[in-house]
Length: 375
Image 1 (cartoon, helix red, strand yellow):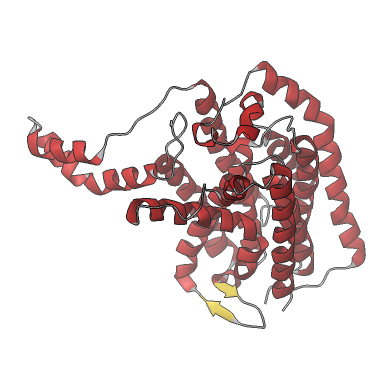
Image 2: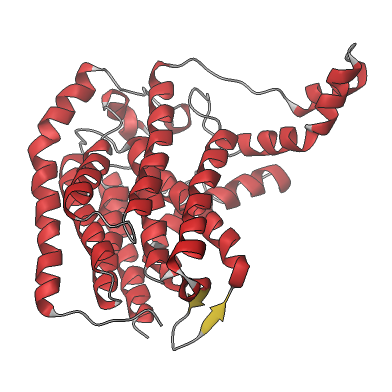
């Protein structure tokens, strides 16, 4: 087990970083707001949300508000909590994922619509292209073409930002860095998946693909859940707050401080993101925080409890997967709209009711996950 009980004085010190993170983020939030408005970083109306008139005002709300959390956490960690053992890789993976999100946000605002070649077009080129070398190239790369076309199912329309398959490649790199760090640098104890009630599984080398998948899926899950004012921020406060205490209980002071700082910065972000939002998180925040969530949970040996610690994030992601697969293979939709929060909006729930009820449900399952982690 990876458990070392810490003293109460240490906990008071750790929780102080929640205040530091919140105060620091509150202090520079007005500057960020002015910069985002000045640069006109506004994505405009989403075609898929045209049926929801309550979202019309968001067409003029700046994105990339997640910078408030990413920058605050990165700087405070660098100056006050830098550890080659436990914080440099989480911060590095967070920044890589946030950079990917930043590119996507900027392209979505300033870029033009991007299209990928359809599968039937590629199959036709394999048969009729005048250059045999190109026919061979299209044939050899056909599996990659199929992967790209399938990934289009999960993308936004019209697509102006980074394609889904491009995101997945870069997220795979971030997941690989995490897997290398945990498997090779942290040691054999991290090759185990610790389950409740004293159960454990020595995954061995299989922990590597598990880690990569977890980082990729969690980053996208938080990104998918960021669709209503206050929704992702409020749920992330609950999750990172729980991780703060679990990190302390398990004896990982540096990770506890990192989680406490993130919780505080998220409090400030959510204050400005409550409806009507001053700015939205954007992919820069959601992808960065999702990756950080996964890395921090695995760093303290809580991969076995992670599903419940990030419960509503994962449910939101699963609702999209279910919806897409049902549409393409069954010819019908399971939900009125995916992600799940839009389904409840179309059932008549107000945005505020949906957000707060998701917070409550998320808190219940995070508390359950916390309880499981203690057993």
